Length: 73
Image (tube, rainbow, N blue to C red; front, side, top):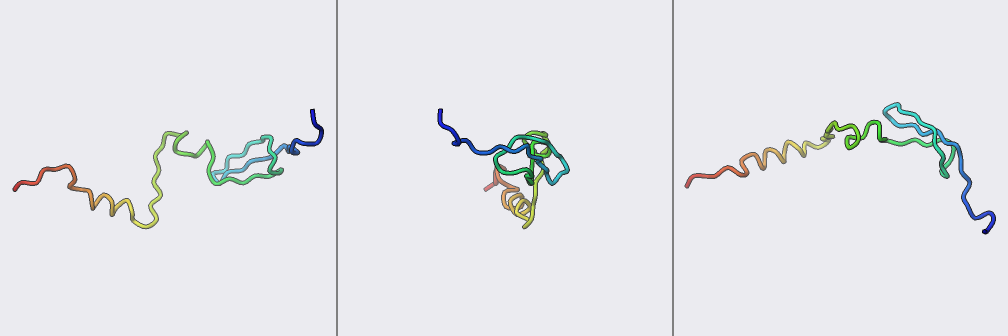
C-alpha cells in the first residue's frame, strides 16, 4: 500500500441558506456553504416550489391553456 496518496480529510461544518447545519467529513475544507440541502430541497421534502423570475410559468399556461380541447369547425 502506498503512503501519502490520500487527500487530507477535515471535520467540516456544512451550512445551508435555509439555516440547517451539520458536521461531516470533507476534503474541501473546514467550512462549507451550500445553497440547497436535503432539508429544504423539494425532492426530499415533497413540497413543490416554483421560482418564477421572468413570468415563464404564466406565459406557458396562457400559451397552452386551450390545448387538448376540441375546436368545433
